Image (cartoon, rainbow, N blue to C red; front, side, top):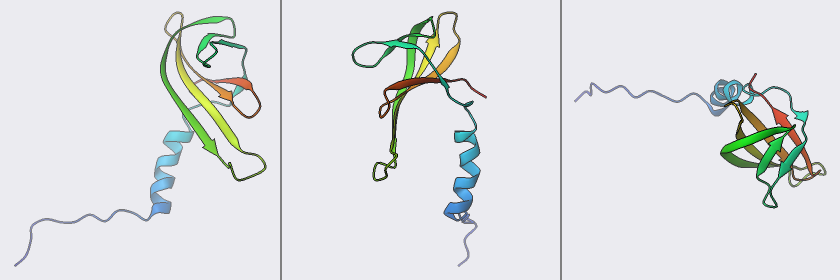
Length: 103
């Protein structure tokens, strides 16, 4: 008995990550230091003198926690006055803020 269904094989993991990585990593420009005023909970209110009208999304990245140079960042995609989008992150290791625009 033959089936009319064809099963498609997934590419090996190395090929899948190579296909996905440019979309994820290529979306933001190089980070630049930013002057951010935030609440005590770390929610941005002002970025480089511009008012933050809202926070669209917040996420945290933790990598290399087992190394001498761990990465711990809390990201916020914010809407500035006038509607412009900006990605901010707080370096939770260094205590500094940075901004990134879409590339």
